[in-house]
Image (cartoon, rainbow, N blue to C red; front, side, top):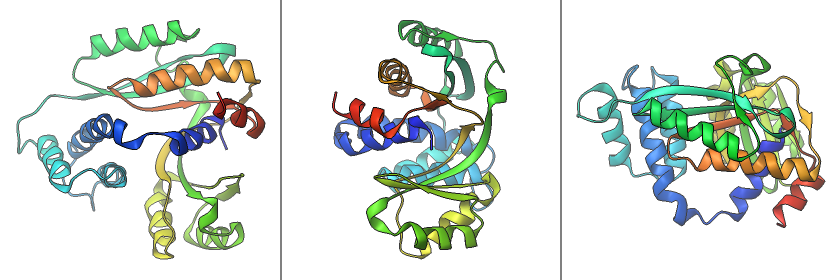
Length: 249
């Protein structure tokens, strides 16, 4: 389990959700619009299905989701968005990938570069760190919902690769093509997710001490707060003890 995943879990518990809902909905709308460019039927468009599921998980209204789909398919006028992948390095040489959806590439690139630099990192050239990551389905379940043995039985039978547990969560991993089937089977068992996404998982990770983890998470948090940023991935490895210490700050 990546350090970033652990830290996101802590932030999820600490977050004032209502205060961030407006920004979250705006990001979801962009993601749905981009995904719908490849087709407005979620049954035939896995990326759109995932974007809709994530929007619904944040209680985004149905009519807002439908409007975003229509913008993507061209049924409604709207901004012209594009996907941009930024790659770079954080403190201690941690590899960082940042996916954005923007209507102004020049503006977003300049702002992302500044965030890297202010946080002690540097924005790199395309493909400078991408080779260190592999697409992976990751589904996170609160530990109190189900036992590890029961969840492992359901998940592995559905085609998942692994189930790992920590103090607060179970993390299920699977191949991207198995993601929706695994998700459906777990949901059918009455289990709900804290999060479910197809991410870029690091092939190898860098262990971080508290001081370095603090700097790296500051970079990741700043990137995630940017209005155009859809997702951030890193190869940081943060122990449970360090995550707990960060959560107290």
